[in-house]
Each structure stands twice: as structure tokens, then as C-alpha cells.
Amino acid sequence: MTRVLVTGGCGFIGANLISYLLDHSNWEINVIDDLSEGKLQYLTSLDNYIHDRVKFIEGDIRDEGSLEDAIAHCDYVVHLAAQTDVISSINAPFNDADINIMGTLNLLEASLRHNIKRVSFASSAAAVGEQTPPVDENKIPSPISPYGASKLAGEAYCSTYAGSHGLRTTALRFSNVYGPNSWHKGSAIALFIKQILEGKTPVIYGDGNQTRDFVHAYDISMAIHSSLTSDIPSFEVFQLGTGIETSVNELYELIKTRLEDEGIDVPAPNYAPARAGEIYRHYCDIDKARNTLGYQPKFDMKEGIDSTIRWFIKH
Ligand SMILES: NC(=O)c1ccc[n+]([C@@H]2O[C@H](COP(=O)([O-])OP(=O)(O)OC[C@H]3O[C@@H](n4cnc5c(N)ncnc54)[C@H](O)[C@@H]3O)[C@@H](O)[C@H]2O)c1
Image 1 (cartoon, rainbow, N blue to C red):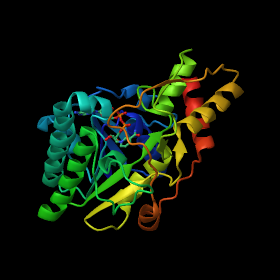
Image 2 (image 1 turned 30 degrees about the vertical axis):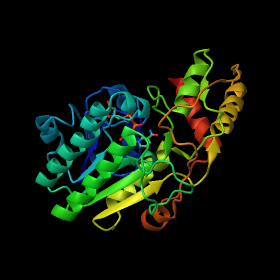
Image 3 (image 1 turned 90 degrees about the vertical axis):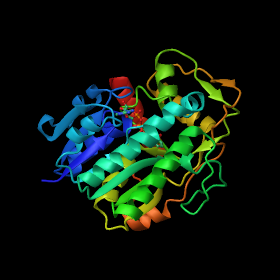
């Protein structure tokens, strides 16, 4: 039986990935999470949750003992556990580096000891920083936040462990991911929906014309699964998004229209000065993922926002 370890599996992408794997594979799933951000309840409340197929270990990826328990008998590793907040990384760069760099190094060492067949590492568009879009894998990375720098360092160690030890690794540069199980997230879609449902007025930082490539967590889960099973060289980097550029103002309008259909009043957003460390324009070129991983995003923004809002209203 194939067994995969998902670090950070109780977080937003983790819960979506585990739901996907329960439906699309017969794999057993180990999860290590320190529950600093995620919730075990995200897993146990999944419609398709199968208790016998998921083993949960509460622990920190920087703790070798916890990691040993979690990785034992695994074939693959998906490394999602991280400090994920750009602004926190600017205020506390050592904490960001400790979790994202030392934690990743610890995991790569454990993966080597346990003959893991492939490690798929959750990198980020932030690793490449401000670029003229569309962003493909050939851009020279120039991160503009400590978070981007620590993700780039994680990619570098993945490449290093492939080069020095033959450990097969993949770095997946997610653009802005959204979807169900994101109650705790501070990213635009989750925050706007949550604040509007709580009767608050969302704040847009900057003029709202900044753009992102918003991709649904189901599509990211599909790509993670393919990255583990596809026959690809020992280290590869992939940009993962939709290839579509959407401004924050357009996003707000989409959310507003959908919530008003539910009979919910949606205020006009407040605007505040742009925040340091955040990219202005982003969308990516997904041709490499399409050609190599057979990646084809299924959700357009309207369907994706709809599924996210339905989850928020239900929960
Ligand atoms: N959500 C996005 O838009 C996005 C975009 C680009 C990259 N990513 C990356 O994808 C991964 C998953 O992101 P997410 O949005 O699901 O975030 P999340 O915060 O929901 O999930 C991360 C999980 O890791 C856990 N965790 C944090 N530090 C840990 C530690 N030291 N030991 C063990 N567990 C720990 C948290 O409790 C949480 O459950 C992260 O690596 C993130 O950097 C996310």
C-alpha cells in the first residue's frame, strides 16, 4: 500500500489535498501538523473523510522525533507546513526562516533516511518576486519579502538534495490559492468573505488594481498528486496557477455579486495604503505544468468563488 506524508496537512491546502487523495487514490495518508494555524477539525469534517486512512501526528517539523514518527513507512512526502504570512515574515524574519528553511532541511534529511521516492515542496510565486508577467520557470528569482526568500531557499535545498543525494524533489510555485477550509486564512478571498459574513467592511490595500492569479485548491491538489506520480527528472520547478490575471477590485465585485445573490448586504470596500513586500502584478504561464504534469485547472473564478462561499456559509 502506498503511503504519503503530508506536512501541514491540517491547514487549508492540506485539508483540500487530503480530500482529493481520499477520492482519487487508495493511498494511506500520514499528517504532521503542530496546529499553530490549521485545525484537525478541517480533516474530520470533510464529507469524504475516512478515519482509517488518515494517521495524525501532532508535532513540529523542526522536531526530529515527531518527524521520525510521521515519516516512517512513507513512500512520498508533500511538504506544506510553513510560516505562510508575508507581513509576519517582514516583522519576524528569523521565525520565518527557522520554520521555512530549517524545517524544510529537517524534512529533506528525514526523507533521505527513509528512502522517500519523491518530495513535493510547496513553494510560492513570492519566491520569484516582482516580475513582468506572465511568470514562467525561467525568470530570475528576486523575492521582495523574507517569506519569498525562505521559499526560494527551500527550493534551493530541494535542488541540492537531488544533486548531492539523488533524492527526487519537486518545487511547486503556487500562485494565490483559495477554496474551502480557509477560515483561518488572511488572504484576500477568505478574508473578504469572512468579514462580509461577519458584517464588517473589508479593506483593500492599494488602489485595488493590483492583480493575482487566483487558483482553486482542488486544482492545486490535482497538480500535487500528479507531481508525485509523474515520471519527471530528479528536480523540477513548476509554476502553478491558472494563467489568468484578476485584479483585487474585480475579485471584490465577483464576491459581492455572489453574496448579494444569497441576500447578503455587501458594503463598498475601504481603501488603505499598499503594503510593503507585496507583488503588484502577477499571473503565471502554466505551459510547463500542462505539458509535463498534464495539469489543467478545472475551476474558473465564478465556480471557484461559488464553492468557497458555499463552504463558508455552511461552516
Ligand atoms: N495559500 C496560498 O495561497 C499559498 C500560496 C503559495 C504557497 N503556499 C504554500 O502552501 C503551503 C500550505 O499553505 P496553506 O495556505 O495551506 O497554509 P496553512 O497555514 O493553512 O497551512 C500550513 C499548516 O502548517 C502548519 N504548521 C506551521 N508551522 C508548522 C511547523 N513548524 N510544524 C508543523 N506544522 C506546522 C500549520 O498549523 C498549518 O496547518 C505553505 O507552504 C504555503 O507557503 C500557499
